[in-house]
Image (cartoon, rainbow, N blue to C red):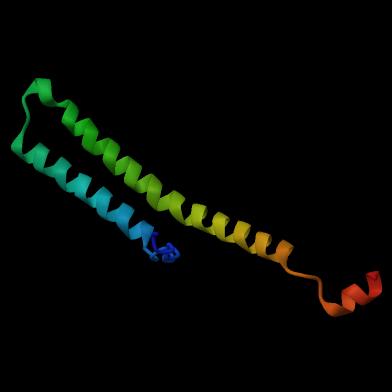
Length: 94
């Protein structure tokens, strides 16, 4: 007989904008290194990989706060719908 499963722990809070910024900075450093070192002409596509990584990181830094705010609004609205009506309202309707 197996033991009952423990509940999952709550999600760990993180700073997702800082993570996206760190990724964009890492791609920027890689781009600078590739520009300094120099690449043969057939490997120049790596520069565009770095530029794309920087672009995605900048987009994430813009988008993530909006995503989190929207989720917070949706959670608040869901919580407001699930709360019971105050006692004074129930007396009037009942």
